[in-house]
Length: 180
Image (cartoon, rainbow, N blue to C red; front, side, top):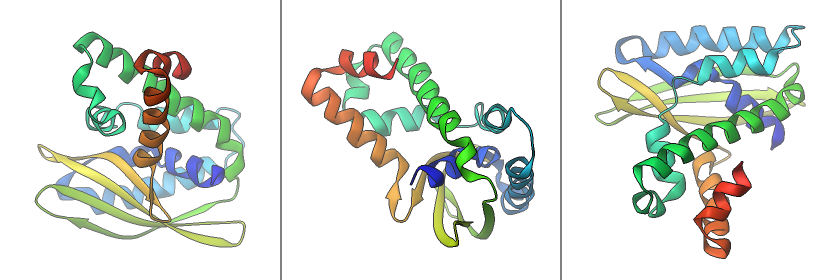
């Protein structure tokens, strides 16, 4: 699962696309990502994270991972959480980058409907093929990534389960401290 997480987080440029070029842009960026995976760069994690940092739908992701607690936070605390959450994603990403050497990624299909866009992928590593579904929310004329399913397990649902468990046991401030 660690290797899949890094592949997921490294599909960095899959985070905001224009509706009219959604499929083509994803296909091009999958090629770029594979190039970074195969490179000898010592800054792979930084290179890949730079592709994603500005394009996440962090507002929706925050609401989804915090559930009802997002509405209970002040605007200031919510902004603080977003920064901490992005750093958590970055940390998870950076700690696993070397695990995916030689992985390959394939765009299988894309779908666009009234509210969302979706990219269906396959990733091959260690002689196994895994399916991934990238879920995007339509925002104006763009698709912004808010969740990824790997083997029918949502990345957002996993974070939400972890975060809500901490909140229920120790409170929202404990979550902030644990994520810092």
